[in-house]
Length: 318
Image 1: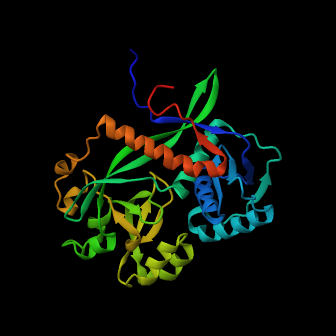
Image 2: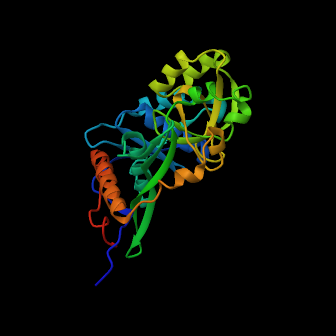
Image 3: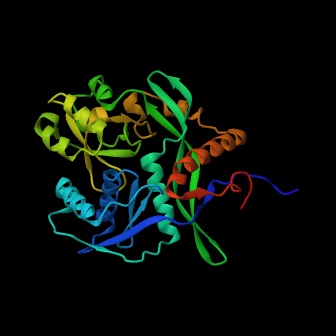
C-alpha cells in the first residue's frame, strides 16, 4: 500500500490572464524594482504588479480593466516623489511591451503578491495568556516545478507558529522599564504591520513623531498608518523597519505595529521562550485541516485574477 502524506506545494492553473508588462528607462535594480512594484500594487484597486528581470508585470482581476498608460506615468511620478529619499531623483520613462509572454516564475510571484495584498488567511490561536498569544498562521511563497522539462508555476502553503504580543508597540514601549533607552529596547525587535500583516525588523530610531509627522503622513500608504500618525504624541520615537535584509527602511508610528516574540527578544518581554515552544507541535491531522483551509482561502482570492490551484496536491504526492 502506497504512503499517503501531505503536500504543501500547489500547482497554479491559469488560462487567459488580464496581463500587461513594461520596463523603465533607465533600468532599475531589484531593490528599486520591488519597491516600485509594491507601491503600484497599492495604488490601483484590483491590480497587482511585480518586478522580475528588468520588467514590471501587471495582472488585473478578470473583471477589471488595466488602467490606461497615462495613469501609470502619473502614478510613477507620484510614487517617485513619495519615496524620493530611498530611490533618488531621476526621470524614468515607461516602455510598454507589445505582446508580453509571461513565464512560470512571474506567475508564481504574481500569485504571492495577490495573496499578500488581498488574502487574510484563517489563523488559529492555540495559546492566549499574559498579553501573549501563539497562533497557527499560513506562510507562503512562490515556487516552480518541472513537468516534461517545462517549468510550471506553483505556490507553497505551510503552517507556521507566530508568537505575538497582544498590544501595539507603543503600549509595550510606554510600559517597559527600559523605555528611557529606546535604541536598546526596540532595535532588533521583530514587528508586524497591523494593516498589511507583513513582518519586519526594527533597525533604528529615526527621530520623533513631532519632528516628522507631516512628512510621514505624506509617505504613508495605508489608512491605518495615517490614523496612527495623526494621533501619536509628539515625543514618541519613530521606528525604521526593514521587511527583508538590506531592503529600503520604512518609518512607522509605533501604534501601527505589533511586537513579535523571538528567541533573541523574548527577554525584553520578560518571557521564557522555551515555555512558549510547548504550544508549537502540529499533529498530522491538524496540519491536514490547516492546509485544506489555507488552500480554500488562497483559491477564493486567486480565482478573481484568473488563477487556480490544483486539487490533487493536498493529500497525496503529485
